[in-house]
Amino acid sequence: MATGAQYRKCERPATKDYLQRRKCGVCCAPLPGQKPGLANEDRMFFLDSSEEKEIRDIFAWGVVAGVTTNPLILAREAGAADLEQRIRGVVAASHGPVSVELTTETEAAMLDEARTYHAWAPERICIKVPFSEIGLRVTAALTKRGVSTNVTCLMSFNQAYLAALAGGTYVSIFSGRVRDMGYDVRPVIAQTREQIDREGLSARIIIGSIRHFMDVNESLEAGAHIVTVPPGILRKMLHNPKTDETIREFNTAWANRGK
Ligand code: E4P
Figure 1 (cartoon, protein in one colour):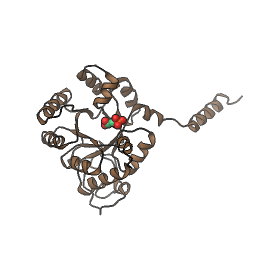
Figure 2: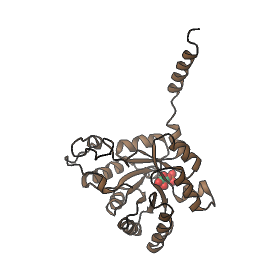
Figure 3: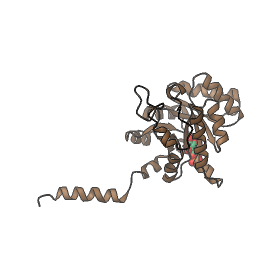
Figure 4: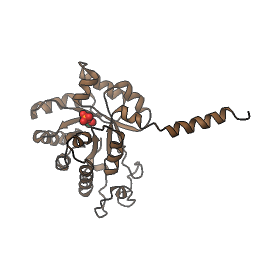
């Protein structure tokens, strides 16, 4: 679980160039055991799925560091399957945080629901809290109890900032849905990242609602810590016809050597 204690606040003057700031080798120097330039929990990709086989296969690539689910994904992929069984399967097939979203709407019910999900794998389950006034209260309460949270359905900088201030471990901005409204999501991401860096907040930005792999590239460029990607889009990132052609050429040359 990412916590504030594991990140040093950058002492350099606030800069719009977050990439430059990531490379700060002075006050942003890694703590013992951290990879240079990145906190250990910082990996670019989470998988946006509940498909156990797909999760197991893609985690073997070594590029994914967590899983996000939501009620729509679970309803589509798992139908009437038992939620606990499904999530336990996801936990077993992956490593890192597994986000499970609350579906109740009162504070008491949400805290109860969170307690149930958290008990399934206390070190791994991250409670996904839909953003609202109640959502902020639930986030603050869970944070106080040391439970990891992912504040979700964020469409604007203001919402993401409030979610980070409430203690959200992750704040999830929805790229595709912001674009559906006709807005450019990149300034939302960049502004959120600048504010998090400026204040040394521990929240990590997840960009979800990815519809195309260019959304991934643009999210990273704008300052996302993490992009949560559906398996189909991650797989599309593997392919380039020139790569295939080059490998074929090399292997044919090797097979025909000395002939
Ligand atoms: C991830 O955390 C989100 O729940 C997900 O990416 C939303 O995607 P959608 O907008 O395609 O439903």
